[in-house]
Amino acid sequence: MSVKAAVAALRNGDLIHLPTETVYGLAARADDPAAVVKVFEAKGRPRFNPLIVHIGSVEAADIIGVMDDRARALARAFWPGPLTLVVPVRDTAAACDLARAGLDSVALRLPAHTLALEVLRGFGGGVVAPSANRSGRPSPTTQADAFEETGTAVTVSLDGGACPVGVESTVVSLLGAARYLRAGAVTRAQIEAVIGHLAADEAEGHRSPGRLSLHYAPDAPVRIDVEVPTEGAAYLAFGPTAYAGPVIQLSATRDPAEAAANLFRALREADRLKPPCIAIAPIPENGIGEAINDRIRRAAGFIG
Ligand code: TXA
Ligand code: MG
Image 1: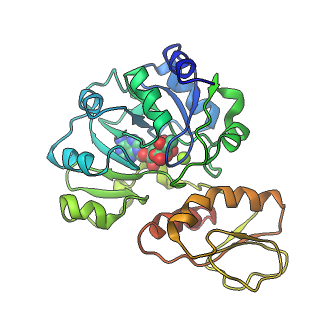
Image 2: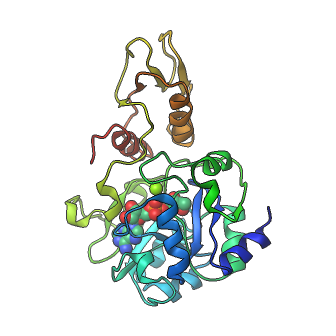
Image 3: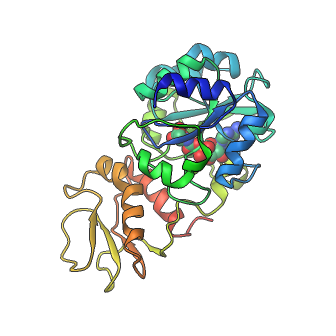
């Protein structure tokens, strides 16, 4: 299906599958509550969890939110790319109340994916796009996985290939002191190199609202930091292993970026084996490892 059809569907208030460099999004125009409500319904997502508004240019971001010097510097460094900026909202019609869950801030993201950019530039305005999974499930990183999750809700499902990053965008709040709300491919250190120190505070009140519930969970129970799996477990390995049961490699060469790209697909593949449990190898916490460990701790129910 074509970009033209996707833009027409958005204009019409319908949902589409939007491929991005991180994960597939379930997208709708951000200025129309009747369109945005369909996203919450299709995902079974609680309405208090605000959505990211995707734009195709910094100019479009400027219309919707207040981009201060820090936001501009981060946009110059990382847009298009897997970074979402939470800033004060400027135009509450362009990103409707439902999209923002009534907050006076808005999360803005300019994705680095050719198809996504063509759709966003063709449409012109802001587009909400949470991951295209049903709420609580692993995010889809291929069109087939997106279709399995929310295929019945969309008018157009674009195929942009496998997502190269594989975990959702980094979220940084610029409301007051800068805060790292969600780990992603753009690391803390990379953000600090541009705007200086990030507030360390991870207190509940400062977290992204969407971070408070069980996420990314397959059907089988998940165990993490497993060096030697118990018999029968499906094992998500990170490098060579002597385990004789079913092994799915996150990265045979222990490359964290490759492990991130494979993570959600590997969880789905493991689940299809209907194992008594899914065991995941320890992943080093540095770089994108922070994002991987955040997602697998949530899948295991350790952050809830
Ligand atoms: O990589 C991504 O960001 C993907 C792709 C499809 O672009 N999208 C995505 O969207 O992950 P979503 O809606 O699943 O994640 C939105 C995150 C949640 O953690 C939410 O709480 C947070 O951003 N968020 C949105 N608006 C916010 C706001 N005004 N203040 C604080 N956090 C906000
Ligand atoms: Mg999600």
